[in-house]
Length: 97
Image (cartoon, rainbow, N blue to C red):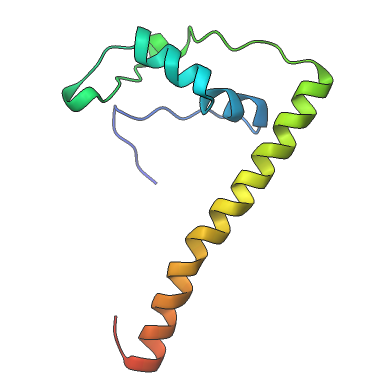
C-alpha cells in the first residue's frame, strides 16, 4: 500500500498503543493540542504524534486493554465482512458487479 504525507505508520504490534490512540482521552488531547485543518480535521503531523503523552501501563491494565482491542478488531472484521459477503452473493447470483 502507498501512503502520502498525511499518514503515519507505527511499526508496532502493541495493542496498548492502539487502545491509547483511539481512547476518548487521546481524542480530547489531540483536539486541544494538534493543529486544526479544514472542517476541524486534525493535523496528525509526526512532530506532534512523537510527543503524545502515552502512559506506561501496569500489567493488569495492559491485559485488559489488549483483550478489549482484540474484541474490537474481531467485531470490526465481522462488521466489514457482511457487506463483502452480500456483494459477493449479488455478483454470483445476479451478475451484478
